[in-house]
Length: 340
Ligand SMILES: [Zn+2]
Ligand SMILES: [Zn+2]
Image 1: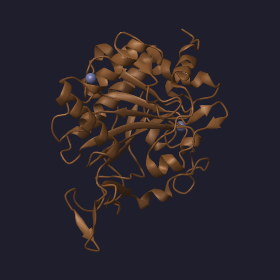
Image 2: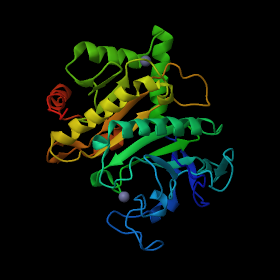
Image 3: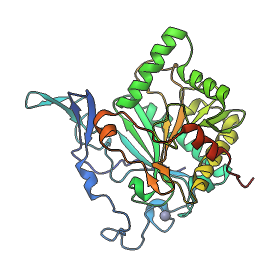
Image 4: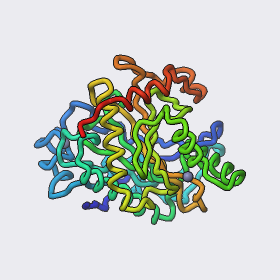
């Protein structure tokens, strides 16, 4: 696992505060020059078409998984200014420099692999990389939250097919995470137990929405799924960060990730586009023992030939309409025969 320590070119990115929704928005003008799907990297390096394959500088060398700085970071330690610079525009709008850290996490040297067909030992190496990068960013005092994710599929807007995920480390807690943290804190205060453990216990008791299970992990479509095939993977024991999961559970962790993704990929006979995301607790802000680390996967499909679009109600009100039955979708995924 080689890590380059240059974080990108200096830029003027900003974080602006929306005073109406009371949340931060990243304005990253440097990202308009990102590579476009299907275009080769002809401008600067004419010799290769994928920057992460072994014949390109970033993909060169012997490695199984690898972290790189994002070449077009929305947030960067190289952004001009300091983390603590908060200024007012027009004597009204709050803004601060777009400081943070954006990394790319390569899953494999093989351009054509996907998360579902990596070997178990490769996925274990990836789990180790996720843990290592989280711990690295947790040690940067100004950072408060690391979001580890993978966008997969052209329909999700992926610009590079090489199997890789990303990691955004923010100097604030993103609003959706903050909401989940507040819920789990008030549940903890009221019940002296974990809200997420309660969700897992309820799903394990009901069983109808379970997709995969082993001694240490469970995968299910939650009762309240916003997306038709929204799948969550939870460790059965309570950990707030992926880095707290003991390596004795790595094989079961890798196995449930692989089997869950394989089910999604077999459901409609094509590699399922998705957003795959890790939900760790915030850090450097206080005690988050009440938060329970887990994975959430959001595929945008509602049927083999139908996409669920984020449209009026979702965009305008943040209220989701799930046009399908979570139990039925879970059963369809659970009933798929996997090659053992
Ligand atoms: Zn490649
Ligand atoms: Zn818990």
